[in-house]
Image 1 (cartoon, rainbow, N blue to C red):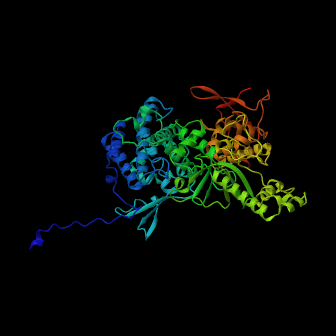
Image 2 (cartoon, helix red, strand yellow):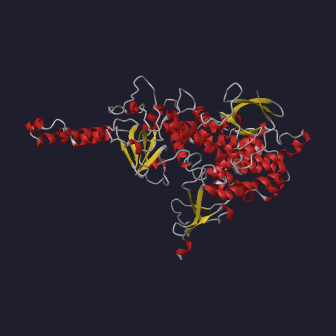
Image 3 (cartoon, rainbow, N blue to C red):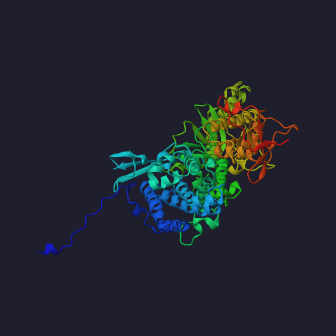
Length: 631
């Protein structure tokens, strides 16, 4: 009888395994105060009817939330937490709609046409900004559904995951940077409602801009591409704790936004270093790389890594990184991000030896725990040796070993016999370690001829009167001081400069071939002028540096001259190939006049008279009619 009055226990929900998530409904995913607030402010930016809002915008937000679920926007950079991709996308959409106020859309249209098409262009801006990272679900992130013991790969091309099912995700190892930008178009029909797609399709000019943006061709997307780029940068800068692109137009200016954790400079540096290595901007485990992985340790070239991280953070609006590299090293030590030497310094001096390639080099390094940089999956182990050579413990151990060897030698050899030994055979008076050091210090004749050219240089952090050039008698000093010692290479400066120039030329050819380098556009770095190839300077060389940060490892020493920028050094190397046409006055840079609809400007560049150098047997595009070479 009493059992009738007992409270019936509710069935407990099944436990979700660690690292797995349950598929939720769009309403549930968008229910948070922060996301609701973003959507409310997005609606506030639009001047559309309730019917348009309910039929074109709300279904798109729901479809996008249904696909993204708890996926992060990046592995270790911005919005890298579960659900970060959805937050980042909504922030970008709001930023873009605010930025859109400052643009007349469609461009170059009579006023009467502008008012008729404005809402459609606004919708395209929202679509492109919201979905600018949608390709990551195809190229960057691998999602499986099922259970930890029985699961299958999920693809967004197959549509949404079953509601209530379990899923897990991981970032693909070896993914290519920027590859996701090319895949966005394939998901448009999955996310944008049919009525919205038909509305966009009515304007063929708009469709060109839409497809250009969604397929990774921002330079061809006109003002829409520019708006999305700025909106994305604003959201990223906010997440990393940097200065906003436009405070008046940024999500972060509202007082009722999601509370943001204050991101310290040490965290910003760590996120930047992770991003550069994960996305392939900096490579590992090869001659010329910026880092090596050995066991549970990651050794990174000190100055090249810090310079690349500082450059990246600056581009994201974070301008608080100290210019003094030594101060950055101290910050990394203070927050236990790097493992210091025995005397508490960040800089280690190491000898890298790659047995497979018969290559070796001495570099100033930062020592990270492997899990600090690669918490989920790491590169393969370096098939070579990394030997610290300035650790006080190593120095003390070597000294003790030498003293012990000397003591054994003296104990086992009578003094009388020592003085009677042949003076030409001095090896009996030396310890085995001393003999080994001398044999390596003086290699046999012709030995160095078999050593391949060294491609890595670690430019000195400081240049001063105490600059040490002789490595043979270099004492074991403070690591920071030793970091100022240049590493000599068998490669001559002339050969090194030629290699840099040829690498740039190969990159340029590849970019033109796969169309990642745009030609004849208003902001393109390459133009065809009178049948010749014009390389806009310094634009093209700056872009090469940004996309090939590894070159920083060697540029400063190999091609260094004074305080020239890296881009100027690459330009100087390219100039020495003699592929460009000089002016009548003997100048390498030619001046060109650019005539637009409203204004005329001047740009400088290198003029290559033979277009086949870049295009080889492919068809050369037509000359840009807006550019004229000035005398």
